[in-house]
Image (cartoon, rainbow over all chains, first blue to last red):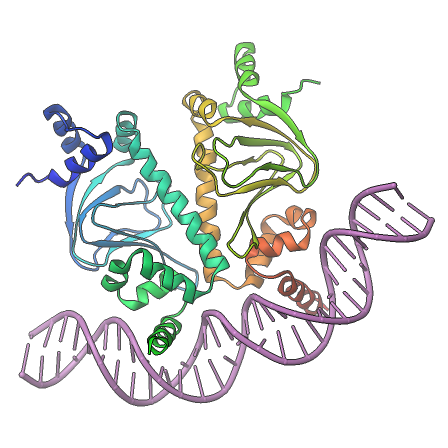
Length: 191
Length: 191
DNA sequence: GTATTTTATTAAACTAGTTTATTTTTTTGG
DNA sequence: CCAAAAAAATAAACTAGTTTAATAAAATAC
């Protein structure tokens, strides 16, 4: 089993044809395949030149710690998704950590910029993450936590199942206690 | 008085030397100088290929309208700042509108990408706006409206003075009524 | 497999922020 | 400069979400 098969198939999907041997060679030379245990830190706020991660299997969360020491999950990433700080190579304000045991292909910002010239659709992924964050921003401002939870449940039920509840509450911007209340209310309603 | 003087001086600042005549010629050929009246719409949600704006004088706001019809100010831009949807040329979800009468230099995404190759610091401005939005996101999640108001007052008192209060409340994610309460409380405290 | 730790639930008292409605103040246009 | 419109203030009743603390359930480790 080719170690980079999942990565190649991602590229083949975005260019809509098979990769040549030379291309496979080039790709595997700039990516690094890495495996992390459950709850393992990948990078810390304050670090520079953090890498981008294309996830093969597993689940990651990118979060911030505020002045009072509270964590806020900003984005999750699971298999076949990209995660990383778009602000790199500047010093990041995020922590990146696994939720589950994870295998991912990582690449430096420099190599990523070069690759983007060859595969412009890579850039689209970057933008997508920006736009996603903007939508989330407005959703949290304009909707109740209950509505936002419902929406997450519709858009990505798998994520809701795989994440501990306190990670979801932090993602929705409420306390674990309040999310638990929302869920209890939902269950009752269904009868 | 040279029509593009403010724009040239911005470029001279980022490259840290004077522009040649040829460079000035090139710059003025891709930008368009535009003037908008107070409360004039510049682009609407749903439009494609929206332009980027470097503001000479005046004040703009970029906002979203949610399902219930409520407006949310996402970013403001004033003289010597950039504003625009980074997601362009894809269909935007923002409205861009003046708060004050405004003069700005506008440029298309295509021309902007080309210019970025010559002046890489242009890209830094783009990133800055992304990072700024992320910080705002966390601030709104993790702090009270009162703290966020205080912070805005410290970081940009000029903006607070120039904006009607209901635009600020929308930016902070609270109702105008509640912001008015915060301000009344602050005034009392000071005695 | 059971002890220990981690995560989720429940309850009660509280606070930040909303809603609606009325009044006052400020801004704008002719 | 005045009339009309827009913006801000105030009040009161309400709701979404927090905090603290105690209990229950689930996951993990040896």
